[in-house]
Length: 371
Image: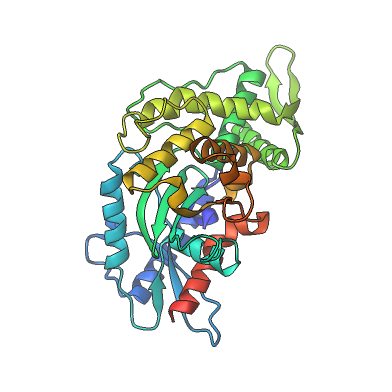
């Protein structure tokens, strides 16, 4: 999915053309399967879907999965308006009988968690039926409330797993080239952590090395970054190599600075994204606690009314993200809520293999049970 939608830094014209051709072919095929007309003049307004074959015995059934479920560009809009458009898209989807079914991603995640026995049982949960899904994607983190198989509230924060890579690249550029990548400070626009640099080839190599480093820093506290022949010294006419050791806390500090300086000022303009009853966020943990509190306020819930809080998505592997969510929830509901035993513990962090795939697996399980 990401390979189709997000090209790498410094992507060639040929690669972009090939990527667009794949998307066009997939879109046309889906239009035919779903019975959509290419002449309706509204194709740009329709969400793009992919079909995943389900695990139902006998085969032949498919689950429709939206590619753009939580675009970060909706963060600035009213959350209620976005949820309304989202629910309208869900209810308005039609397909030939027996060919496709639709399940929102948060609902699929909850279904997958139930299938793999990650959630409390009906007895231990006291009959609670509401779950909160914290989905840490590439460029955004979506917090959704799921009740009785429906998404009743959803909000996106413009911070994701790729933010850590972006901030590491910015840090390397500033340290190696002495160039700052500070933004213009306009809090009315959606913040972007992407650094700007006038050497596409060097930028691509920096991204490749930074991505590898962030992955390594998810397992250990330090990583070594080596990029030979990154640039040429104009004075000595000799190549310059980047060799630097990187600590996890350095990357974490860069992300925290970006949250304080760009994300929080922007979100303060979106009245329903952050809770007005909590102090202004100063780091990732307080940002998550404020957004979670706002979600609870909007849906008339308390933390004790939730059966679980599920952390999923590729960014959920990052230690800082996990620790920040634990601290944020612990601040709202107490330490037993995130690390207790039995029915007290509500925070669910799936194993690494399931963190990213729980949505797809849950969609297959949901489709099988629905049929």
